Length: 126
Image (cartoon, rainbow, N blue to C red; front, side, top):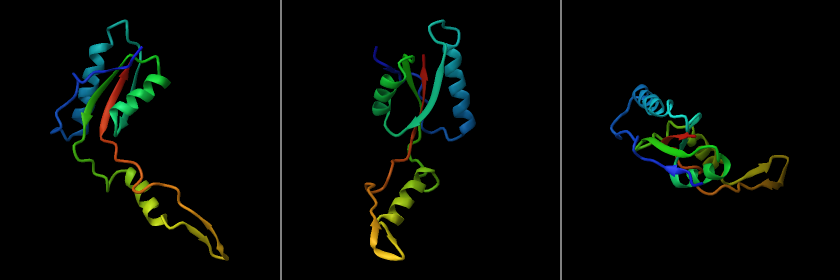
């Protein structure tokens, strides 16, 4: 069965307070808690809802619905954990040379930039 992508619980992008977003998420979960069809949830973040939905559909078949809760319009990449990966890749892009034997080198296999910042908070309901 396909994992339904349900946008009806998405908040306005203008909300900037984490407490308000979590309160909204709690409210969304409260709308499903009394329905005997649903007994579990999973909270996640992603930069690509469709790709993540497809992955969850294969790996978490016990869930029936994926509800995007909040989209951060401009992730603060410089303050995000994702920037650590990007910075490490950029600084080590040329590879690592063995100081005692310059002929030995490890090459960096990452593509440019690393992962995109995650900007969607979602919940799986099943």
